Image (cartoon, rainbow, N blue to C red; front, side, top):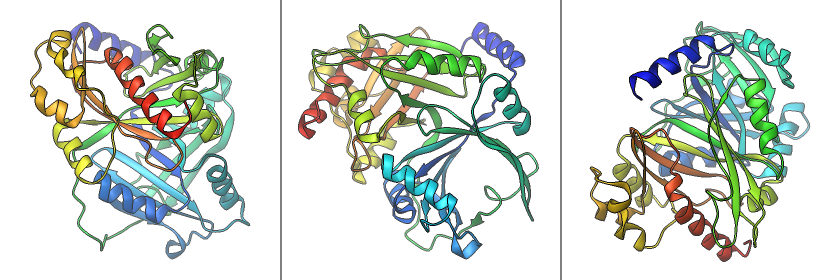
Length: 381
């Protein structure tokens, strides 16, 4: 980010009615939290850091907190189906499969954040509440966004515990955790139905004070068969970035249509996780059994001509299937996993930014053709 952009970001942050420090956690509702936690530990290098369940006094749901650098993932499952909380988790899993329920936002004042957004038209999911234990207090409040996804405001300045009251730190007795270099959540992408993209763009602008960073239409994101449209919304300091996708008319069903069918409506399509060494991170993921989308080898024949000189050896990028794109401020490297559960819904992007603030527009055609090849294999194109 250059000096002018830094000054602009600081000005926008100063003017924010809803200052956000970053992503606090991402919570998944899943069918079996214990098994999900083990998968993310072994395949993605997360540490199982805390637990909430029967042993800690929770009788309706069980949750595991997994961490890697600044990333917090929470996996929650129902323990019983005859309680309000258990029904809520079970209903979400029945409707969507394993999926993201909550993108929580770290704020300095959760009650103020809730009241400000409610005054601007938000729908309440949970009123502000203060929860305490021997480590201090946390204030949380939640509002709705697209589909069954929510945002929880988390104020934790008075808390010194491992995560939230009700969670206890755990000593993992299994194989040692080996991190793979994931650093933080770069962005979270939501898929919404045809005609709803601008509705949620307006929601983030009007209710949360976000601004639009960039937009892509069906001329930017299209192949011979399918197309989609996308707009990227960001808060003032750009620590939170939410691309929002909707399908566009094409000859066949797009990846967004497929997602909406199998997820049962709008939801989070993928989470982009940042790394400082994508060659190492992706090598580790592949060695642990994570499957990635692949592009033809011809993609790399003209890579240097298209993006200019880069530091990474092109033969290593080709071996791993990593894509490269450049904007006015630098370049980025990115790669996308295949879906990480049985339904063709949630997947991950691994991204390394070498100055670029964009989202890989130059890779869209190759990427979406790769997705279409997978759709064809599944019979859903």
